[in-house]
Amino acid sequence: MLVAFSIAPATAGPEGSVHDAVAAAVRVVRESGLPNRTDAMFTTLEGEWDEVFDVVRRATDAVLAVSPRASLVLKADIRPGWTGELDGKVVRLEHALEGDA
Image 1 (cartoon, rainbow, N blue to C red):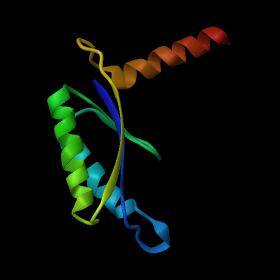
Image 2 (image 1 turned 135 degrees about the vertical axis):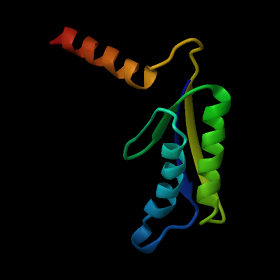
Image 3 (image 1 turned 30 degrees about the vertical axis):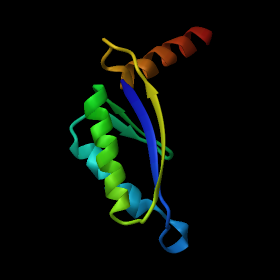
């Protein structure tokens, strides 16, 4: 499964920045060993249900360690038996786009 999620603390740092809290969450994700990718809005993880949601929970806990409240947005693509989809979906999209050229 793929899970794209975003965690935001209730309180921001100077200039409205939340990057320190987000960095704590992304650190948990990267240390998990699961395939992952972070962009400007979301972090996407790939793995089995229990392992992915354990990482999401621990990443949320990391934000809650520096903020009294957190907001979590999550989207999941559950496709049993498929792996390598963090890259596979993008590769298929790029091939489709090349076919349109």
